[in-house]
Image 1 (spheres, chains in turn orange, blue):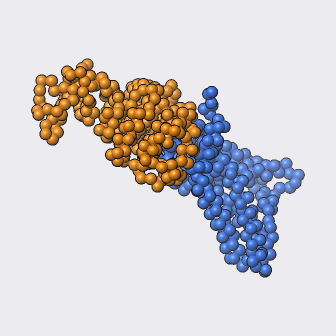
Image 2 (image 1 turned 30 degrees about the vertical axis):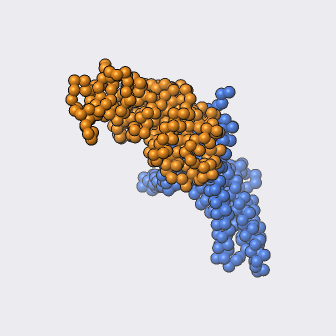
Image 3 (image 1 turned 90 degrees about the vertical axis):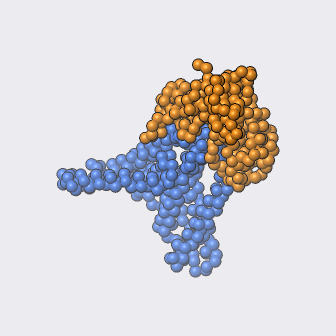
Length: 272
Length: 264
């Protein structure tokens, strides 16, 4: 679905952000896009959605060039930014004004998601709290049934029950032909949700793997000591250490935070 | 069925519907505010003139001033979806083509304004006049129409009478196309920035004329018969009409491409 080849990008008068970056992502997954501050996550998302133009290289999303922003492309892409704007209208009016642009817009799903997030149809959007606005925007994004959904820090501002609902609706409402890209620093919020991970660092993709593949290769556990013959990476935590070792038991749940730290510190934790 | 990615009437209809739903409150407030404000303004102008009957010249001058001032303000706020980064995300990613978005702004900011404002002015002017006549026996209201506004006077049989008729409209349209283009170029405060840019360009050209004609004394070698740039009065009317028409087209095309290439 997304095919990026030799992408170079820089903001005016700044050092290049991406230098010949390559990335391919297929439909049918919830992909976590991780990186340190300034790694270029949001810029990459904007390039994928056509909000920024690459300096050079090829970017194809669903076979189209995002920079053209063709309506047929935009009708299949929805971006939930971290900061957003809503006009002074009610939820119901917003849905009736914007839903028809998306050919697969599912009004029943919209109503269901509003119910799940405890939002009322007649509430004025501009009077909602930041978290409520975000829940509405996530609901609208899911109801569009766009083939590419891009969410930038979707759990920022959500309260604890809403994060639970977020994970539930994300897992339960997606179709096989959809791809969801979640860019976030709140990895704990999406740990059991994402099934593929992409880590960006210094303008390059330094890790791109399925969670199942990671889980089959690496064991994430706690230990009293950081040392050991098989320890690939360790981090001190209250009461001991978190360690990564080669997988021996079949599989284990992936500690994304630990994995992220290991990979961005350049540790060779995967077999070549 | 595959629809055009350049223009589709149904999608354009959705854009119109979206714009009306998102802005209906602002539209109503602006319309009521404009009519009320205009009524008050006309009343104040008359009060300052001790409730004298409107003359043709006063009617024209007031209309032209209001038309230019509100036109600059209204068109200078075109493309509100480009004013902040957050608004740009939703505006640029709305599934409509750049042409559809451009046409909607062009129609709502320029075409509708040019049609609506004279109509509203005429209605308010007459309403205010008749109301005063009813309230005050010493005030006599004389209706005026736009046909009385003097544009450029040329003899009936002049070969350039069509050019002379078009010139005020072509030049007048620049009042709208300039700030309209400015709103696609500047993200923040587009109207002051556009006016400032135009002022710089204007004064630069004025300086060039002064430099060549006065400092280099080219004027002493030029024609002495009052010709402008080697043209007589009729030639100048044709020149400035064509110049204004081309400038309008260039500004509109440039606005379209700026919108098409806009990043967020």
